[in-house]
Image (cartoon, rainbow, N blue to C red; front, top):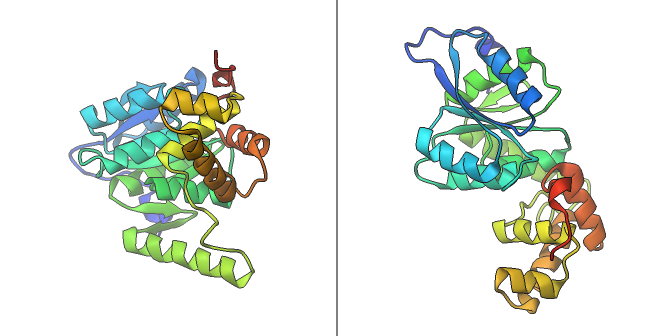
Length: 246
């Protein structure tokens, strides 16, 4: 592993790092652009304010790095990240998740979705800019450490082992929700019943129940209300998207 310090200064590559910002709050997005473009080796090539559009634009432009908010309209940032990284065109794009909410489980969800780094939105420019450079060179950044893919895999395995030592179940902790489970979670936050969800998605009520059980287990909550509150707090679902289904 390397320390992030070696990426604090710009490089002399001919081509600047091409960056796409995915952020739906204009002031925060403008602040990011201003900070990034103050560096001679960084260039913002696009700004997007919607998760679904972010996937399309990422595959079209193929930036080196994406700064991805989690709380987005259309698709949340974890969903968009997973789609981009699972695409052959987007597999080489480095994605840095930016969020207002932080805990270890959120970090694991981001890494499992395909993110290369994860920061809260109060991150200082002196932390974010070196991370952008490191991620542009196909690295991962966790804390102050710069890792390659095998090192990240070993780091995550070590975290699982530590959980087992302290009595937690690593098989149930930090398991990312599937795309379908994330979709159902969005319906739950709108107060939709299993019957309404089944109708909207064209699946059986039993299938919805099965997904619901999996969601509660993965999130370690007892009921739908707790799941909805957790999803809103983490920014997986936007408050303005929770209007009841007609």
